[in-house]
Amino acid sequence: MEFRQIRYALAVARERSFTRASGRLNVSQSAISEQVRLLEQQLKFPLFRRTGRGVELTERGRAFLHEAERVMTDVLGLDDTARRLRGAAGDTFMLGTGSGMAQLFMPRLFGQFHRVAPEIRLEILTAPTRNIFRELQEQRLDAGIALDSDPEKVPAGVVIHQLADAELAIIAHPEHRITKVPPPIDIGGLVSEPIIMSELSVGYGETVTAMFSDLGIRPYILAVADNIETMKVIVQSGSGIAIVPRAAVANEVALGVLAALAIAPPRAVRFSLFRRRQAMSRKKEELFAFLKEVLTD
Image 1: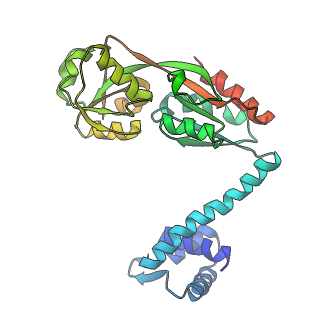
Image 2: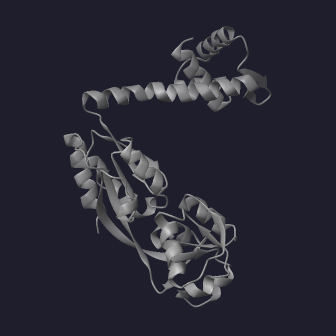
Image 3: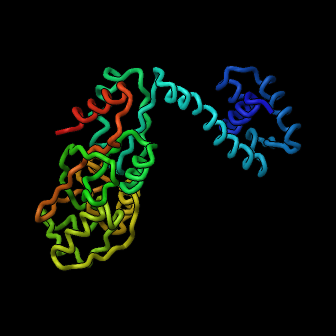
């Protein structure tokens, strides 16, 4: 079984066509057909069946190529691993970000990133705050951007650098009844309003829960999601409201699919940059210093 055969088969699966796979790979269609045929002979089952619209995966073909794609990704990633282990150029900086932070931080970061670190590839993982802390502690991330947390909940050996404050706002479907109320919206009046929450014990969820607890009331929690993107989609459906950083919904508000309403009393959250205490390579330390500079208000 050759790496080339699997690569060709995956291209056919993605394109649903030998002809389009040929154009994608810049390889003759006959060569692709021959290599896929040889692969199927070794497997002793067909990967594809021809239809009037092209080709479709067989049941066993779908299962095999799903696993093959995962293996190929791992194999291709070995080159990066080798570079990291020998400290060679072309290093990869692993950055974790909390959900909903792309609109707030990515434009700042990528406005100058290639000028500052052209030889480093940035890989970004979007994950809940709890997962970012775990990945940092287990040395699978170089740095993470997340909501500022109680120091007692930050793992030992993780260092905090505060970045920026972000105003919290209520988000709702533009036709939701709450949008007819003149802002700012009193938090105390939301006690019976179905609300979509994030993680309850850390990050946004912890902050929003405290807002209600300070008033001695318990919110009506309709659903708990581990990321803001899911929260936004639920709210867009007209099912409940949520409280998130206003900056995290700027695009949706501009498109008119969500409304963002000021809160009374006003509340803000602070984002921080987290890293392990251990020193990184010189290039990574330079990139981390750039992150602190460009992302700090």
